[in-house]
Length: 346
Image 1 (cartoon, rainbow, N blue to C red):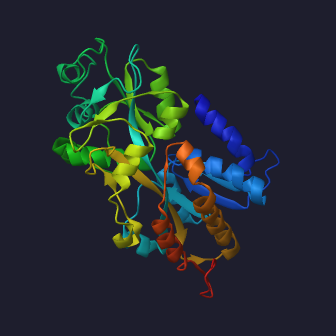
Image 2 (cartoon, helix red, strand yellow; image 1 turned 30 degrees about the vertical axis):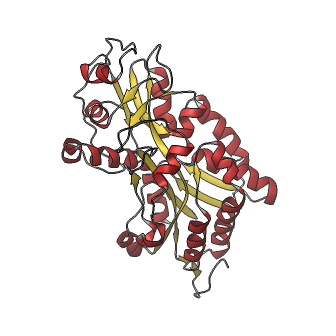
Image 3 (cartoon, rainbow, N blue to C red; image 1 turned 45 degrees about the horizontal axis):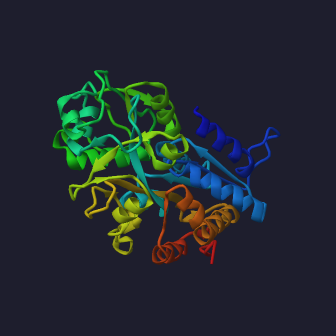
């Protein structure tokens, strides 16, 4: 694991209730690595304020969905939203916590963050294995004046079931008909080329170690690891830098009020400043709770995060949920009840 992964885990050891004496945490959750940095930060502050611990296993969205299905955690976490029919089948409720950006990161000696430009065609062709070297004419055409070595490209992708992969491949499927036909969009896909890393931290670690590599991570991982990110040409035809402003621009048109099950995809959105690979991350909970006390603690934690966590989210370049969306979310919470039909949180 890289430095960022170790430091977050060390902080989370206290905030999330892990101890060598195996003291049980008050709340348990598992899933997406995309929001792990902000959940760790929230958990540290929340424990100091309330004394309530949070044990969150950053195992990938696929793992989080499996664990909530198995009822081994109080909540699951996924960047791949579940469609309304799936939620209904399993008796689940879904709500978003923050939004953020997935960014291509590279390891090229002499190339600085934001210096390399990529468009959708080139990015898709790299991940399809069609563009194999950094001095390929298609990349060079976009990057006049940038030294591009005669070096093989090592593609890095996620090896686990990943909501970050879902967001990334959703974008590639929208912009590349060949990608959509040959590979498709899901949390796990049959990658045409490359090596796999577990979690955002695993991909970041590979890219840091391998000269000539390219990967994709949630922006907080790129920032914390001081990684070289690429500019991306968006739907409006502009090369955009990943940052809070451009993630917010991509999220501006989201219609949460009319999204069944709060299902929302934010890739390849219109707008002059929109970052092309933006997404939300979601919490999954059962509507009927056999442990209503724990469910109440979970909702209290996220209620606190919506009220007090925006600044911490912004520091990591996540986009907090707008107040009007938070009101929608809290209205949805009324569906979470105990076995007698009583709401667990009012």
